[in-house]
Length: 606
Image (cartoon, rainbow, N blue to C red):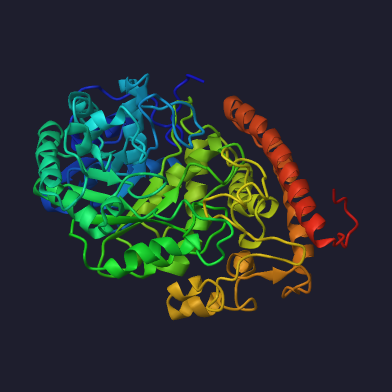
């Protein structure tokens, strides 16, 4: 699949000139190609903000703002929408994509082909495709791109050493689209240079980072900063030296501060050597325990990046309590566009409804930045499944304005991506995408249970695959009951929430069905609010989810999609149906063999 495709910007027919160096130049080039005679009014202090006159003849904004305004003007014309009125300002100043690309060209948890940036242990990219990617990111307002894996594997540490000239060339390309690069760094990198420690309070360590960071910014003056994963999954970090994470993060932040850079510090930290026999340690509690008490101790240019849920991008999790517990600290919420646990970009899974639910529980003002793990790769359509592009598109709009509704974001993507599709078919596609998450959830993990995926690959069912592992990923199913008691009488996890959410989660009766087994251990004969027993609800959901997946295929077959997208979508739909059948039969068999309960409707349980 080497054909270059424009995803949601099919109306941008031609490649842009190669000599563009600023976002304003790019805005003028885009408008000229679109045949739009709009005047650009550059206002220095407007930054990324923009406004467009009612008749579309003038775009006013900062250097990058006029580019965002130009794209929104072109989008509105192509989609037949009215332009937003007044000055448009992003809710979050940092709107980032985290790529998990390795220097060997592999993409960790990547489902769209090889790396766009690396191959064979070196930079290897198509400059024209980088410009197209910059165009795509800028069109939805994404302004930071971290190009390498948070698990920094050799030789990626060289990005801030002898690969700096190549990094600078790549930054030059994205600069014309208002996209700043960021790099993931190895916390223990000074050890490679003769310093016997990476202790953040050791002067030699701090000085090495100061001097190396000066070299980095001499090469790439507008680098957004560093991204760090420390003390997790065997990564080194301050805990190695008896220090806390504020001490570790602040040392790096002070090296970045003179250059205007930020230090993004991931809060994915937990004991990955847990004994499955230990019923007291509860992995979802880890981030709060490691960070909440440090609120107010981080430097101003430190951003703590917290996953949307307390586990690891599972099909259904509650909002992470860490996001609600640190009002004196700059926080970023982290989503995962890559469908690691949500179908590998084989199964259709549109994410905007999930984001809306998270923000409803958290409130958009709780965080000051937003990040998402990339779903990009070298496939011709960038995202493997052609419909997976809706998540990248909608993420950009959501990062700019989290008040955007899921329906509008998905409908706008459909109108821009398939401009020749008739209105009724487009409405059908919007409905399919809006419902796709609910379908996937039904045939996979029941009622908030996590970690029922196949070990390692994380695609397909493995109800017991992580039950006796070291990762703290247990559901404790036995012949009588399933789930973990996370109330005050259990692990106490629910006590990490503020009173309103604690009251919602702390009893089985008040807890939403979708999270009942995340917070409570329930007998199979527990009677749900609708009168069904827990075990019958599990059976029903899985059978219904499988049937709904088959119905999705019938819907797709009747949609007038372009031939390439149709071919790819239907091929993957066949794989999704097979996956849904496996999930349905294996999970139902798993619980049938424990509970001994038959299906009330007489369906086959294996």
